[in-house]
Image (tube, rainbow, N blue to C red; front, side, top):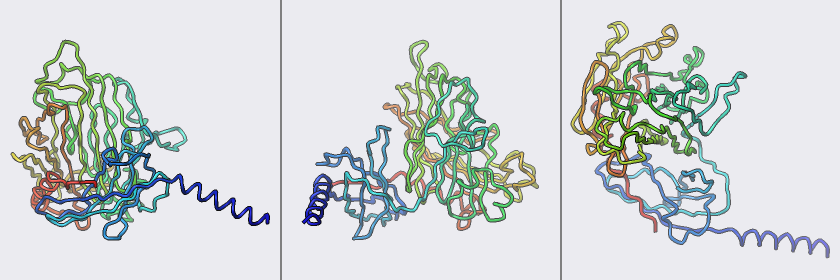
Length: 425
């Protein structure tokens, strides 16, 4: 009889646990309005918009036609409650795909294979490089060398990026030969042994140039660094197997430092830059948010002229070329040493750079000795959105000439300009 009582008690306990588990099944319709097929297209479901959802979502299952689709849940505001469901869609031109999504308040481990990587680490005396989620410092404090890899770092199978933690805030690039995750091993400082195993490397030396899509202030019609801020910081917003979002921010900037901006004497503002990298993508999405309406204040982004200062031997036959178009695309192609201090280890790198800025943000453009630049202003809500991308000639299956690279950019622009439409029922 004791055994029966124990079995009955165990069953009742199991039933009790199950009765407290909540689930909600919804249908997510994804429409592709564009005339081109999309691969690894970002799909975001905002959980606050899901009707009848009355619990905190701790896990989700996504299916299309009975097939499991990898996904991740993201806490976007740091309150330890998931705000968004994210997955990737492969969808034909003009097509519609319906996904069955089950949301649950029960935490379940994920088996999704990591396809993105995020690193934000400190450099310590024991070289342990502890992970951090946020670093904030006075604008006058130099912590550049205290951050391992010199700034927050993100990577997909196709490309790696880091944003310098200093007044430059330049976007630096890591190019690959193989399509795989590598930065956990090379950390932007590829060794001779890793080179022999076809690992990638840093591929860009920006120097005093704008780099690839770096967001800058403007002085005398030239890109200028963020050297007048009260506080600067970087933060990991969210990361998972399929998407990583990181933030770069500057606080307490004098409005008087911004050309065209009108404000009360002594007024200051903040700017938050969000960088999103998706699995299967080489391009980086940049979303900028200002704390106040700057009434026509001008900033800039663009690409540098790769190899324009290199000698003919260093260029290896890759002539420095570039374009700045009325449709918001600026691009360049060239070859130069990616790190002037590692010439004996790293050879010159042929690469292509690109930035796309929607025309509604563009106030003008300029070509100088080092850069192709767009002057940009936020909209009335204080927002600004653009994309940047690059390719390395050594990439297998990539782009290997200026013509190939430049010819690919209109399709890229059209793709990011026409995202899929997501409807939850």
